[in-house]
Amino acid sequence: MLGLVLAAAALTAYLLWWGHGSWHPEPWERAVPVAEDRLRVEWIGGPCDLEWDAAVDEGPQQVVVTVRSRVQRGACDDLGLPRSLEVPLASPLGGREVVDGAAHG
Image (cartoon, rainbow, N blue to C red; front, side, top):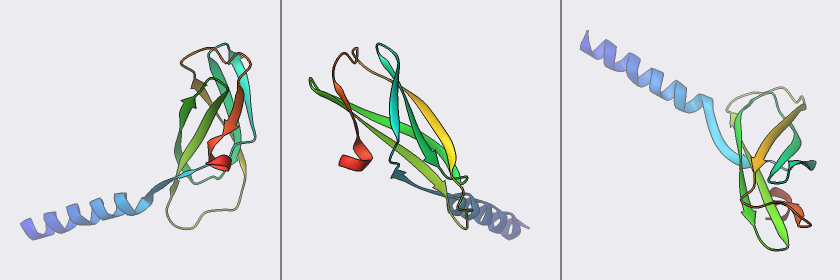
């Protein structure tokens, strides 16, 4: 009985690992200021995107925003879905340029 329980636990762990893919950069289409210190980044993602986040690197002349998504492993429909994410900034955007880290990194 213990062997069956251990086998079931191992299979469950494997399926959870297999179903959750790795993170990859996601090019975005536009970044819209929604407040002095916050942007809304918009892109087209796939239906198998499980989650996403953004890394922000702020400099005096530009703000580099890199959106990353984690895609489910296995087969997925080739369907584009509008996605967006609000990104906080450490300081007001001002006249700084916003750059896509996935496209320029």
